Image (tube, rainbow, N blue to C red; front, side, top):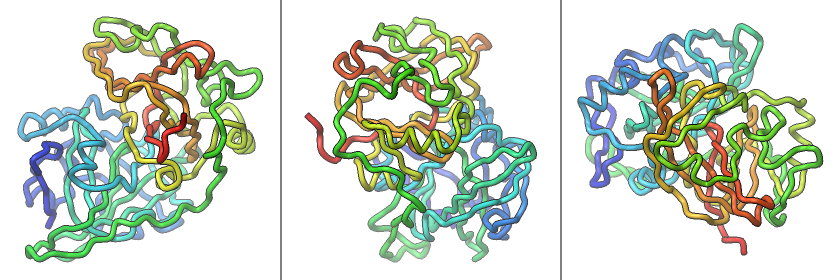
Length: 387
């Protein structure tokens, strides 16, 4: 049975044992369409599975999420609060596009979180739903019908019957480790939230100084997925952070993290450019670089949309941080001096989006500028502050 923790810092919400036992999808109020008691079905190379309408693609337009938050005690998505409650982030499910209604063949599979007592937090309509149990997590690379690739994370956990059930996690879901916990019978248990090592470390540039340019021929900050300046780039710090302001997002590659205008070798070249470094897993970035502060939350379609800001808050004051942009399976990281803002917007169709705005200092790029981060981009506090 799931053990659900609701501590004095309100972050998770209470899920009834009956619902939890059924591997319930908090976005739809139904069973996960990928739910299976056959671990190999979702994790073995060569296996095939379908993802139905689990609302993987647009957590800001989830009727089930709205229902959950009307019936339970939901709170805003906050990694800092979650880490105070549940421990260290050991996995964040990578953002990927176009999952609902797709068929998948597993090409590569590896266990990224061995079976251990940990907490899974599902992202639902700008809120989070958390439960604590014994869980293991596998990362699988799949091929869908059109030949494109997806990187998914599969969680497996035991139910009260002793059976192990697995399902595909939502992009943006998080796994937290623990140092202590309680078994279902109330007795104490030693817990292990360690991560398996990443398969490859690309390039470590911790000693590299800050730079003003990415490479010749590209303005900076620029959208690495489409190879041109961010469409939201503006020197006006208020433009993307003030309630009532409007802005447009062009085709920046927000909706598809597999988008990249170059080849795989171009990504490697990018990772070897001065002032940048790359890793193939978030755990590797955290281990070598710093503590996780924030992940730009997953959201629905952004490319080609118009927005009006309805709320805005400063998350991190201007400081030296690490920002990692996701391209395909690679975290492409740099260490700018920036401030980080959370904004909620309403679009022309009346739906809402939760976004992150990053504003660069003047001495970082030659002139101060702000832009919208990609969903799934990560922000970390360096181990040592650079001066």
